[in-house]
Structures are given as C-alpha cells and as structure tokens.
Image (cartoon, rainbow, N blue to C red; front, side, top):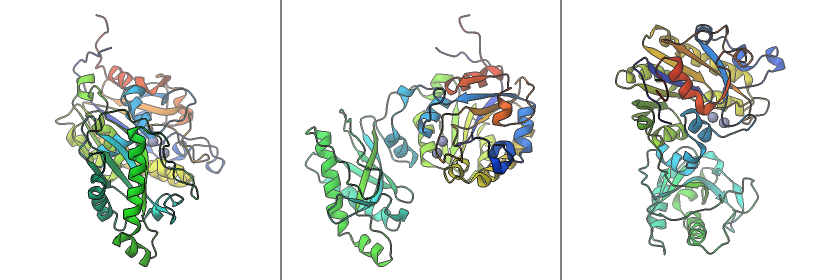
Amino acid sequence: MKLELLPGPKLMLIVLDGLGDRKIKELGWKTPLEAAFKPNLDYFAKFGLNGRHYPLEPGLPVGSGVAHTMLFGYSLKDYPERGPIEALGIGAELEHGDLAFRINFATFAEDGKVVLDRRAGRADFGLDEIARDLSSVLSENPFGLEIEVYHSTQHRGVLVVREWKRAFGVRDTDPQVEGREVVLPEGNREIDELVRWIHRKSFEFLENHEINKRRKELGLKPANGILLRGAGMLKDVEKFTEKYGLRGAGIASDALYLGIARYFGLDPVLKLEDEEKITKALELLKNNDFVFVHFKKTDNASHDGDFLRKKEEIEKVDRLLEPLKESSNLAVLITGDHATPCSLRTHSGDAVPFLIWGENVPRDNVEKFGEGFAVFGEAGTVEAKYLMQILLNASGRLSEFGK
Ligand code: ZN
Ligand code: ZN
C-alpha cells in the first residue's frame, strides 16, 4: 500500500534503545522510566498521544536490527542479517552481490580450533594493522575472490567477499561458548570450502603475526583468528524516501544503527555523540522531512542489569530533549526499539511505551511517560510496523486511502 502524504509538520523518530522494562522492587515497584525524573518526556506525554508497541509480535523478543526494521515500517523479509548492516555501519562500501560477515577477532588455542576468548580480551591493540594484512593474505585465495577485512571497535570487525553473487546459506562459526571448538561447515559447497579456508588461513597467518607477539608482551590476549557471524547480502529494499515520499536523515553512535539507517536509504547518516544529536537533528530538519535519532546507553545499562544507571541515562536524554519544546512545525515519536528488562539482562517480548507529541498531534488523558501510563494511551497497543503510519496520521500528514 502506497501512502499519500499531505503537507504538514516535519517528523522526528527518537529511539532510546531497550527502553521498555519491568517494575523493580528497589525503585518502589516502578520501572526505570517511571522512576526517572524526566520533565520533558512527561510534558510530551501529557500534551501528546500515548500507546505501546510490540516490536514484531506480542511476547516475542527480537534483536535491535529486526526491531528497527519494523520501526521504519518495513517487513521481516527486508532485513538482510547483521553482516551487511555492520559493513554499512562502519562505512565500508557494499555493492549488491557482496557477501558480508560481521567478525570477532578472537583468541584460539594452539590447535587453531578451540576458542579460548571469543573477543580476544576486547583489546583493540594492533587490530587495524592485522585487518589490513589479513585482507591481502585472504585475497590470495584459490577461489579467485577479492576479500576485505575491516576492524571497527574493540574486538569487532567486518569481512566482505566481493561479488559473491550466489547462495550462501551458512551458519556462524562462533561456538558462543568459550572452551568449545569453532563451528566449521562440513559440506562441499563452495561457501563451505571458502569458510573453512578463511578460518584456517587466518589462524596460520595471525598465529605468527608480529602484532600478536607484541600483544603477548603487553599482557594482552593474541587475536590469532576470526569468528564469522551474520552472513548476508544487500536486498532490494524500497528506499525510505521512495516508500514515504519523505527526505530522511539519521543520527546514531553505533555501527548497527548507522548501518540500518543507511541500509534503508536515510541520507545523510551521521555518527555523533549523544550531546550533539538533538541540535544536529533540528538543523537537519531544515533540509529534510524526517530525522531518526538513536540513543544506545539505556540498552547497555539494561544488559548490565544496572537499573539505576538506566534511570540516569533516561534522565540524561530527557535533558537533551529540552530544545524540542521550543520547536514549531514538528511532530516527534519517542519510544524504545524493544524492552530490555534489567532483571533479565536481555531483550524481552514485552510491550514498549511510545509517545507522539507536536504539531496537530491530539492529546489523550495520559499524564506521564511510562510503561504503566502508556497502557491507558489512546493510540492503544499496536505492532511496531504501524508506528510510522500512526505518526503520519497523528500529525495530519496522511491522505485518505482509496479516495
Ligand atoms: Zn535495541
Ligand atoms: Zn540490547
């Protein structure tokens, strides 16, 4: 269904990653969002429209990549796996037909099979150099393929096989548990042979690499191999601009979110510190119709089970939102991509509160922003894939369908 837009306010989607939570005894049986001092978010909730969303399906926990795919109004089949998203996120050029993996630089035992540390102690010393050298070594392969390795942050990176252009159904080589052997494919398809070859060659080369000698001297774990994860290729997706007829931009700090925004065609997509994001978003709205702004630290605190830090992170974002109050000609949707309850330290399938505030947006009876308040919001409880449509409608920008 093609949405027809009417003229109206500019739009902003602000995501606090993993925002949703459960009530916590130490917070007086409130969630971190309910317990936070957040006058701006409460103001937007009071003078706006509230509701809750399920990221994909009621009760189903999902990853951030899938959750953002749904927030942008796309479907699961548009999601290309993490490899291509990470590649775009770190600024690697990716063409249709290229096969991309996200990788961990890892520490292997002398046999080159048992994984001692899946993240090589998270130490990034020398990994730029290792990635560069590994690119040239792997490009001398019996398959006639061009292979590029990139280091991003900490132990993370990306491996791109150029012009693969064929089937690639392949599992991650990451055993997930340390002390176990790397999971290598056993079949005799070209992709199986390629993955086995990349694994063996990387270990042989990196085991004796000068950088790893220096890492050991410094008391760091050697990065003597790589784990391949999230294989995927770009898909033919309708770009955001075409889908909605809106010129859209994105702002985030982390590769996954920069990548997903680029994947759906937001442009420009800028990597910024949290403190700069809202000012820049307002500036971008002069030449764009829509800006996506992502904050990550709420999710990090949740994974650490640190509900006080999560509450503080929400309060920090709240202070950054102050300039929005003075903006006219703007409608903003604020939510999380999924719930990450501090008690679980992982994503859950709980409903996530959202609010819409701004030009034309109707007001409901909700007084504050929070899980328990949003239940009474007049936007109801919906699937995340409808949120863009609900934002467009609330701000008076949707034309009648079937007119
Ligand atoms: Zn997330
Ligand atoms: Zn998370």
